[in-house]
Image (tube, rainbow, N blue to C red):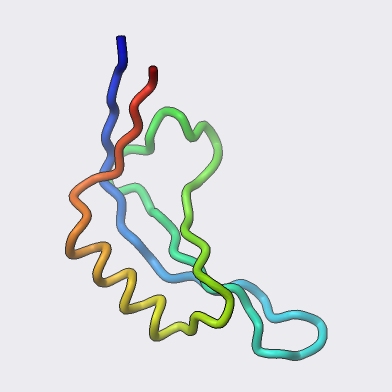
Length: 79
């Protein structure tokens, strides 16, 4: 029998540190910050979405706004 769990998350843009070469190649990612509770499967970890290489902050912010406006909850089904 499966068991499904849901949690509410806010999608927030984060940026990693640029490389030692000085190139503007810092990874851009979107953190899933828990609003009420964390999914039990995560333990002490966290969820994130790493964007494709070349994605800039504006694209990440647009994506985060879209996700926040359209995603009601994140779910996990344990089988």
